Amino acid sequence: MTVEWNHTDINAPIGVFDSGVGGLTVAREIMRQIPNEKIIYFGDTARVPYGSKSRETVTRFSKQIVRFLSTFQVKTIVVACNTASAYALDELERESDIPMIGVVKPGAKAASEVTRNGRIGVIATEATIGSKIYNQYITELNKDVTIYGKACPLFVPLVEEGLWEDPVTDEIAQRYLSELIDLDIDTLILGCTHYPLIRSTLGRIMGEKVTLVNPAYETARELKEMLGERGLLNDHAPALGENQYQFYVSDTADKFKNFANSIIKYGILSAKTIHIEEY
Ligand code: DGL
Image (cartoon, rainbow, N blue to C red; front, side, top):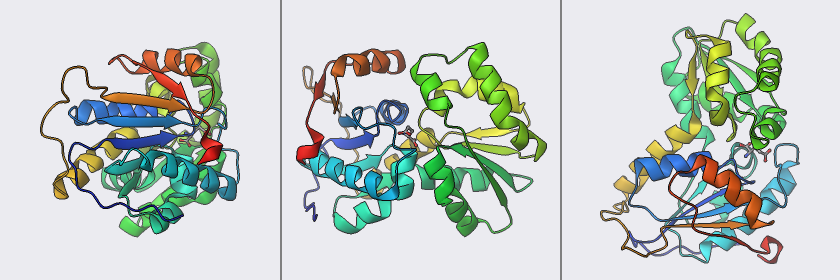
C-alpha cells in the first residue's frame, strides 16, 4: 500500500477512525477544539473489538481504513483508537504520505508532564497494555517514572451498554483499580477510547489526589498544533448546508447513530454503511 498525499487544501476534511463508537470521544474533542474543521469518521463496527485481536489483524484492518479515508483527500488522519495506535500506527505512517496522529503519544506526553511522584497508571485494552507502548513513549520522555499497566476489558461493553453511572460499573471499577490505588500512583491515563465516558466513576474511585489524563483531549490539542504548524488549520466555518461531519461504519448504521447521538451534541446527520473489506 502506498497512499499518495500531495495537497495542502485547508478545506480538506480530517479523517478519524476507530474500531467502533469509542473514537467518537476523540471526534468530540476535535469538534470542540477546532470547530471549523470537517471530519470524515469511520467506525469499524462490524469488526470491533480490536483490543482482543492480534497486531497483524489490527494492522490489516487499519490499512484498509486508511485506504478508504484517503478517497476523501483528507488532509490528515487521526488514529482515534488506542489499540490501532499501539499496533498499527508506525506501519501506517511508513506506507502513507498522509500526516497521521495517534492517541497514545499525546496521552503519554501529558502524563509524563503531570506526574509529581513518578508513578503513573495506565488502563486500556489487553492489546494496548500488552504492547507496552505507553511505557515506551513515557520513558522516552522521562526516565524517572514507573508505569503500571492494567487491562480493563469489561469497561468497553459496560460503556456500550450505557452503564456509565451504574453500581455494576462501580463494582468492576473498584476491582480493576484497587491494585493501582495500592501502588500509590498520582496519574492515571485513560488509555482506551471508551473510558472518558466513565471518567466520573473512575475519578471518584481513584480519589482527588490522582490526576486523570484523557488522551482524546490531548490528541485534539496536538492535532490543532500540528495543523497550525503546517498552515492547514481551517480559518472559516463550513458554508451552511455543507455536510461538516460525515460518519461511516462497517455494520448497521442505526445502533451507531443512537450511541453517537448520546455522545456528540452536534447532531449526527447521517451514518452510512460501507464494505471496508473492499479497500
Ligand atoms: N477503541 C479501542 C481502544 O481504544 C477500544 C475498543 C476495542 O477494543 O476495539 O483501544
